[in-house]
Amino acid sequence: MRVRKPTLSLGMLTAALAVTGLIPLTAGAAEAAPARPADYAGSCPAAGRISQGWHSGHDGVDIANNRGTPIHSTGPGTVIASGPASGYGQWIRIRHDDGTVTEYGHMYERLVSVNQRVGSGQLIARMGSEGESTGNHLHFEAHSSTSSTRGMDPVPYLSARGVGLPCTPGGGGTPGTNFTTWGTSVRVRSDARLNASVVRTLSGPTAVQVECQKRGDLVNAEGHSNDAWAYIPALGGYISNIYIDHPDAWLPGVRTC
Image (cartoon, rainbow, N blue to C red; front, side):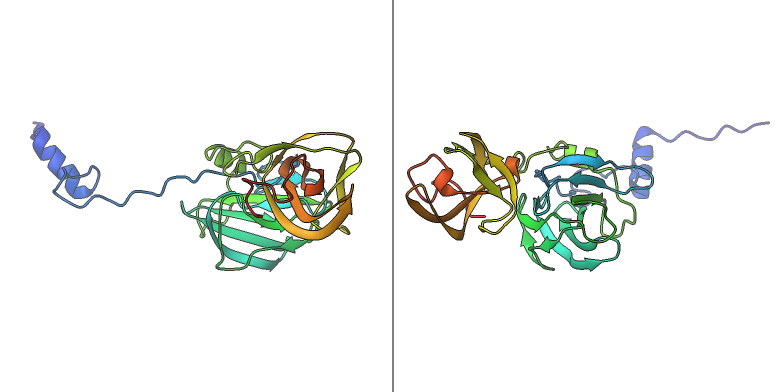
């Protein structure tokens, strides 16, 4: 004869599950588990075209652009690696406040060091083609934690943080200020230096979004002298503030790079 097992009451079942940890106890019965940090508000890592996506043989996404194109941290965090790396030539890794890690490779210049705290959208490096690379690009990876060995697909990772690829720095997490340029044949340079490479030339007045500004080489042009330069992420470089259509040499309301 089959013996029917007694059925637990709902109250007894709840208590049993709570003991095993399958459901939480009622408020006040035990301390609640600490909440997972919220996903950060993301920023675009670099302007450019997607030259290779994430797949089984490629742990990240490649964003191709000119040598010297600025590379930005996608979110606030702490630099846990910055230096030479096999395959990358040079790399940077950032552990974010939500526990995830982003990885940046092939740059020719690094601008942050280990243990440095960085903000969302902060300039951290400049694009290059060092290591195992066939052209100037950023190899960008996203990892679930510092212990993960395989990068996750960066597209949904960034999308969950408000950033779509391809993207323009300044469009997520680091809003810029709108201005208009003036003049013709205005050179956009990879840095605020007169000997920096020209990444683009503006043929005439252009609406631009200035993300930040910094001091650089003194420029003497159009009857003016100014050492302030504006960084325009959509153009991938800097122009002298002389060519920003505003009466002030140092643009009001624009942060320092």
